[in-house]
Length: 188
Image 1 (cartoon, rainbow, N blue to C red):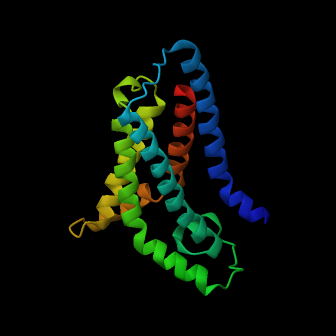
Image 2: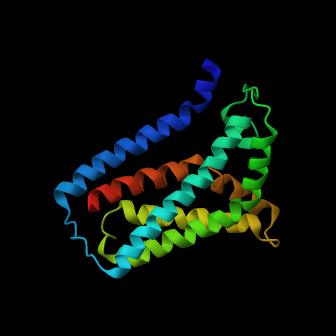
C-alpha cells in the first residue's frame, strides 16, 4: 500500500498545488477584478443546462479512467500502480470497460461540443478577463485537438505517440475541474 501511495503522490501534489494557486487567484480576482452581473436570458438558461450536461459528460469520461485503475488495466494503471494486483474478477466490469473504450471518442466529442456551446451561450467575452475561463477553454481545446490526432488515419506515429502523452493525462482533467469550479463560484 505504501508503494501505491508513492506512485500517486505526484498527482496528489499537482492537485494540491493547482488548488492552492487557484485559491490565491480566486481571492485576487474576487477583491481586485470586476465581476459582471449575471444576465438572465433564454440563451443563458440553455447555456447553463449545457454546462451541466458537459460536466456530466466529463465525469462519465473520467469514470472510464477510474474503472481502468480499479481493474488494473492500461498503461496509466501501470504507471500509477505498478504493484497493483487486480482483485476484481468481474466480466461485467470488463464488458463495461470495453464499451466505455469504444464509446469514449463519441462522448469526448460530445463533451467538447457541449462545453464550447456552454461557453458561447453564456457570452464568454464578459468573463474572459478572469483567467480561470481562458485556461479552461484552452485545456478543453487542447484535449480535443490531441484526441483528434489519435483518431486520424493519416497521423504519423510520432504525432500519435505525442498526442497520447498529452491527451491521456490526469493533469488536464484535474486543472479543468478545479479551474471550472473556482470560476463558476466566482461569477455566481
